[in-house]
Length: 180
Image (cartoon, rainbow, N blue to C red):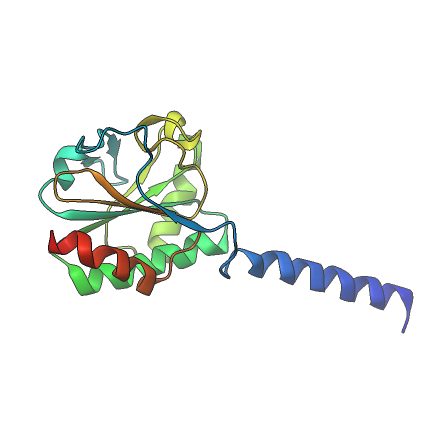
């Protein structure tokens, strides 16, 4: 085998390994209870604006269990997470809110709009603010993508998952929260 063919093969294997690493379960993915810094019983206070200019905030999601996905436009696991949330929305609408928070700066809005349009997302999509992108703000410590947060009917963080969460994993977490 020629050296250039071997190099091409090695590069291809490395690329595919990296590409699929984010799609399979790994030890870096973890499900956590809400951060201990948030007082138990306190609703998460947040305010974002959707791509349609509507509010996505504590008040608009109140009264229903809410599943919020944290993604970016440039990685395959985020695209998969958005699609898993679409399936979840179809099964639970109108009982459960589903929303997507994109951890990208405002100048990436055209990419975010194309992302939402291409994936045909029928739930609210908003751009995160700088504090949230940095892992600070209302969802402190959550700046890894994809990730999921489930808020109970009062807006309190009830479940958090870092890494790609398949529909079944979200369903399992949602069940006890939705029955409360």
